[in-house]
Length: 475
Image (cartoon, rainbow, N blue to C red; front, side, top):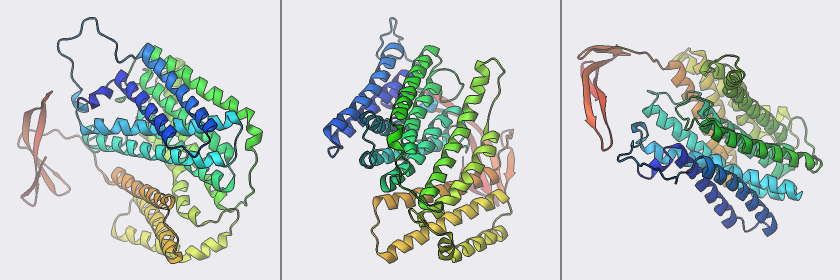
């Protein structure tokens, strides 16, 4: 943990941020040979300006190399909760995605500065947006996995403000990669693409502000110094304000768009963008509303899981339904009757399988909806896959990525719903040698054992698990 301890505190984690941003800048300079040198120089200047801002922040408010006048003879060591493999992989992956959104931002700002807003820069931007989104996805997933066994007793998402701060850029980045596809192939949604690229990086900066300003209480919060928060807030306003001024200056160049019918893939992806951005705004409201009330001395409130489940989930349901249908719809113009005729047997099968799940598995309405959505997405993806084989079409990297991502969403919806709806959580007080029966399993508490690690000591409960009188596990 000597390496991962570097980013176990505020100053070190910010140093990691700057280091990752430097890696992205080097990667852009090395792997962008096809980009004209003048445009590449402009992109690197924008990335350099972002790096300069964070280096100033690092130097004046959070210097990790500042010497202590009276160094302690013995340090406080790394928090035992952080002495875990999760610390070694979760923050770097999350930062690779977080900071990586600076690259699409730099591409967009450079295109706006130069007034070169044709489809060429879109083709160059898309791979970087996809890679950043992939890193952010892996980072968030690793965070849930780490929380599942480290903190949450099976909990994987708590709608913690800092969790939301990483989730909001992910939602916008998801909309961005879809919008880039339309802008590149059809020349539409350029305004969306520009605003989403600006918004994604701005939300990353907002997340940095939330974590490091001390305005919220969270297990993820690093700092409580308001000076640090003020610096990032000013930087955030400069980024958003400057970008929107550039956007307004080039707005006329972004208005050119190829026409498309109401029922077309373009419309479907537009609906996708609207739903994702609306979902992001619902999370943003739930995250910032308590902070705004507190700052105005209007009282303290807590916005938790009930709000997000009531607002966020209904917004995302149509998005999950749509992601299975839109790949079948043609660009520019299509006919609903063609889609209905093409997929009629699939829809009948989906309904029958969902009804079968009602009879065989559960009558929980939320679980049945999740099972229906899972079958809905999976069956349609299988149809797309089979059609590709029949047509002997190439399995491009983009196609394979789409299949994996959409299947992943289906699996997540099913797993998350089953966990929250069918899981049971309760606090039980047990004496030594006492037994508790849960779902046919007997849990016997043997006592508490002390254990030693290299850097800390702790206590661990010893529980045996029996089924039908036979020991099957020890916890």
